[in-house]
Length: 500
Ligand code: ADP
Image 1 (tube, rainbow, N blue to C red):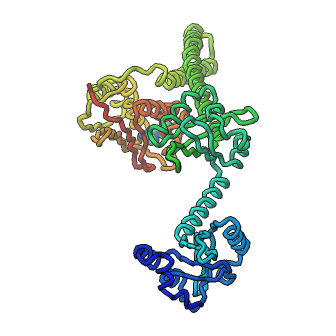
Image 2: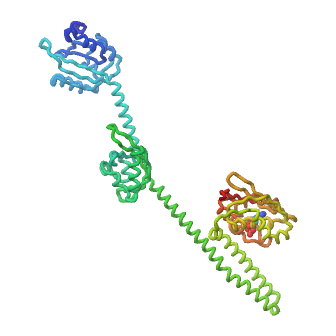
Image 3: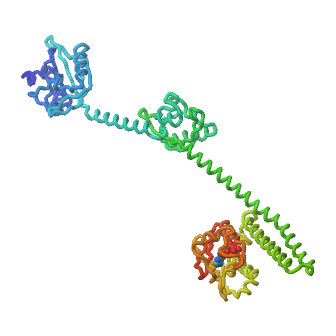
């Protein structure tokens, strides 16, 4: 290296002795400053900056134009830089220069033909370090690559729209898969052009509202390229792009299958409801209309027996008794079925019911069977509830008469109590009767389910299913706790409704 470089007189000469400010800048800037002569030999460098940035001292050789300082991948750019500098008088490039310790540092390198001194040309090259910017750019590139990988490989549709609701970005592959469109079918188009006419207003609300509130969501039908409609569940978020323009990012999921399953389920439920109502009506009409002919069968058979009393033999009388008994049982069955179907079809509005009065009336109605069975009753004072009077009476009547019927004790005991819970009343009707096995706890509430033969215990097997229907209509539950041979407790709950 020439001593000339170290010669401060040269700098003085270059800048003019009086220009102390420039000297100060030259010595203190972090930019590398190098001045070359027309033979491309170094005439000046600012040593401090070189030392700080590249770790070089003079002796190491500082020529940033020399091959060993240039990154192997940038030799072409470096040559072009030199050509531009010589031919055009100006050049610029971004590139890496080698640090003394071997690693590479990014610089913005600018060169200028500056002056002709003593008839010779000089070149000023200033290199500013841009590692931080490069690093940030690299990070940005990586994150953009990640972002585009995510969007292109997501299962959801990703769109960016502007405030005019024009589509600016789509993840093409997903759009092709879900809606059949490629990028060029969509970009620049109005999103609303693809929306089902019936969902147009909803879509406007969802999208415009999203820009207003910052976030939005909704379920809207979009047309597939093949003309069919696809349900999309859209979530959107508004944002400002780099130019400060309002945009919205939309992420949409194909919900067609779920929506269809939901619609199918709804249709099935409606169908079920309809067929249930049909069945209820059928049960009502059938049992109602069957009563009259049955009454005729029973009464005319009885008339027959009476009128031809002396002419018929004992066998004929036995047959007639069977016929009458069958007709009566059928009447009972039909009556019970009618009651069952009427729980909903003939439901009355709820009124205030004093259960003490209701119980009194039920016990009065059951007076005959109570006296016959020597039953003893114990009961608490009962609350006032809201309910259907005849239905609630029916529940008490069925449960108490079962307690008497399914009892083989000399003195059947029936205990009736009510407990106040937070949101409901809990009633219990306990007996000391025959009890049931726990495996029948659920099935006895099913229609026609009986655990005993008619000979042992008469009945139709409808009573408990009526109770269950009534309690359900009142918003409560009914269940049993029992042990075979040890008696049973029937529990039912009735919600506490505010009594107006
Ligand atoms: P039914 O009384 O006409 O037989 P229910 O529907 O009232 O019909 O009762 C169904 C079945 O549940 C009865 O047949 C009986 O086996 C059983 N059950 C009902 N109540 C009691 C009870 N208190 N103790 C024991 N078993 C009972």
